Length: 356
Ligand code: NAD
Ligand code: IPM
Ligand code: MN
Image 1 (cartoon, rainbow, N blue to C red):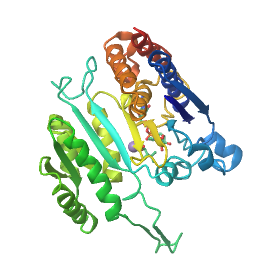
Image 2 (image 1 turned 30 degrees about the vertical axis):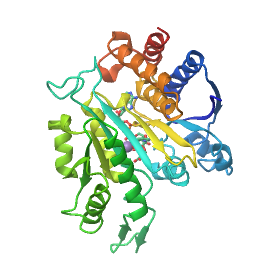
Image 3 (image 1 turned 180 degrees about the horizontal axis):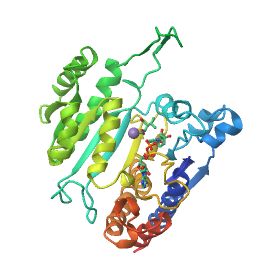
């Protein structure tokens, strides 16, 4: 039966402003497409929760979240209240690891009505997917400090890449590339400078790629890859990268499509042993939080990705069509898109098109 249990976690800052707009679309989609939602709202995974409880999550967070069909997430972090590495390792990064959400899928698309900061680019010119490894790599807890507080202080943080963890993200990326018309995979590397892990990453791309002779593959060092994102964004189809490279590329890509405020992401456990988590690419934006001017479209597109993951493909497509239509109107564009709309007005603009 088409009944979904969803944990709703707004987190901090503009997460609290954009999540309600996403929820409005989810509820409208349920109504229109005939499925039901059981939304469970939570105030944990926020810095205010931390200040009250001394931790980011309740002790039984696994029992609360594991039975869910998905997690609909806003953003975490308020560095003036809690250091970022405490709030993030205590919440989002823990979800990704413990729920084995090893795929972070982040679409990059230039939408009709949204001008690209790259001169002359039109919708269709920029349309690719960043596939980011999401549980290991440069985001490791292996390392430490020696001689702290002295002149001899040394800090070490290891990059950890496993064959299991690398091959499975590459396989996901190759499968995705195979399913698309261009069948093209680009790998982000840095095997000239990072002389142990990155040549090894390249060798795994070769090894896994041998099973995908129909997928054209190439690789770029991360430095020139960022340049190509700006100069030749039409060159890309599926771009796979390690945890840190994928993180960087997934802010740069959306910036090339006008704003990071519209970019969605899916933190997926493809085997379905754990719930997947859906969140916009952007963070809590303390600089604009509380003003009601954040762009809600990243969160709303995220809602569409979540519905797609749950099998509600028609609903997902309808939301995306409503986003495209709204972005072509004045009332659908917030300040990051040189418009005047408030968060609520932009959400309303999408909702109105969704309802027809
Ligand atoms: P950010 O994404 O929060 O903001 C970067 C810039 O983009 C800011 O100028 C902000 O105003 C703007 N922006 C972001 N989202 C927007 C939106 N929807 N509409 C309009 N403008 C938008 O990144 P940051 O400033 O590096 O980080 C702020 C906090 O968020 C930190 O605590 C950081 O750790 C955290 N963070 C969390 C996540 C997450 O939860 N997934 C992601 C990134 C950053
Ligand atoms: C993201 C964010 C996080 C990351 C931060 C907040 C830890 O930037 O989801 O892209 O680096 O993964
Ligand atoms: Mn990021």
